[in-house]
Length: 181
Image 1 (cartoon, rainbow, N blue to C red):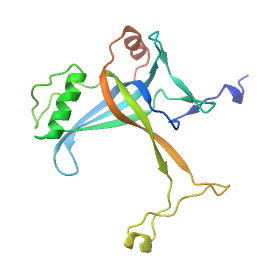
Image 2 (image 1 turned 45 degrees about the horizontal axis):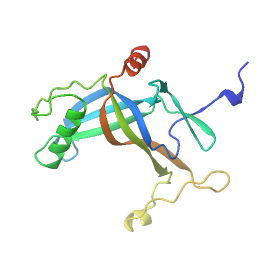
Image 3 (image 1 turned 30 degrees about the vertical axis):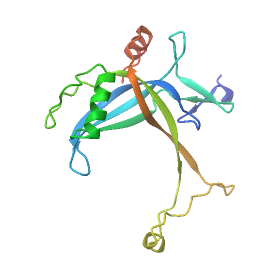
Image 4 (image 1 turned 90 degrees about the vertical axis):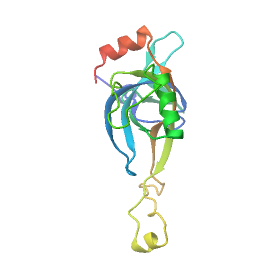
């Protein structure tokens, strides 16, 4: 028989910031909202790689255990001259991919399955009611949604702060092979 004590919270804990392993599970090339060529990559968290190389799928924060493995994140890579292109080539280099040229109309898409080391953090988001017409006119957001105790409902979601490099260790490759997406 299983007990409640054996359950762990699934999702993004507050104070997530650390170095994690993520892998690309989907890729798309389409224009951005501003019409710029953009590659959108969907990532999932593999886990935290311990110093011995093993992968930990759970983290503990404030006495609560959270399952972080499987959380999903998105990265956006605009391909246009200037700073965005420089950042794209830096990303390509860290992933061990061509970082010298890119076809902005039909880029090579070889991201799915790549595992990477990245700095992840959590972003706090307060749940809000839809803005009233008066709030919209004043440029304000809707009022916070409160729980049964009158507390604001806060949600944390993961975000990628920085890509560090491709993750090719045998432990990571084994984990990815044993956990297909």
